[in-house]
Amino acid sequence: MRFGCTVWCPTKAIEHHSGVAMKKSDFLVIFTLDDQRYALPLHAAERVVRIVAITPLPNAPAIILGVVNFQGRVIPVINVRRRFRLPEREIALTDKLVVAHTARRAVALMADAVLDVIAGSEQNLVTTANILPKLEYVEGVVKLTDGLIFIHDLESFLSLEEESSLDRALEAP
Image 1 (cartoon, one colour):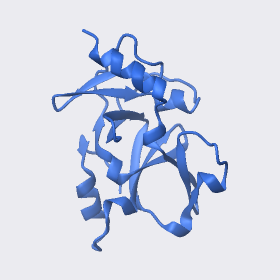
Image 2 (cartoon, one colour):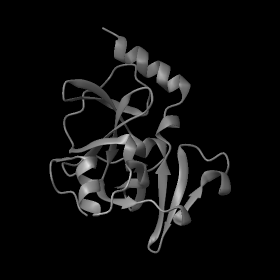
Image 3 (tube, helix red, strand yellow):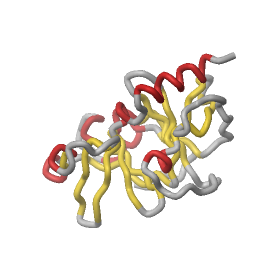
């Protein structure tokens, strides 16, 4: 399934994906940075939207590109490239924002493209504890015939220090 529309909603993706009733927790949203595929659990994803103007946020952690206004909410945009130490690049008009939520806040993740929603399968999933127990920001890996997909651990994506710094930046006048 390819998402060429301006806004994508996970509920529609589930309905379109299969005639079988499955839970949101059974699915992963697949996106790319360069040639590497990454995933978020579908239950954490709210929407995928085309890139919009990002307003810089003074005193925010380096991992934060700025903020966007999404349906009246001010949402911080996370630079996933920086988090995974990938080469920086200019923002392109084809880039996407994956609007997602953690237990603490809504966030937007910058992605080169959003490719698909796939049904998660326990036999294809390897937890980080079985690979590298101290691997940061990744909760697991999905093994597919055409490669590996890293599953983000969105809850640990910002350190406590980054969370506090972001809170202060967002509250500043």
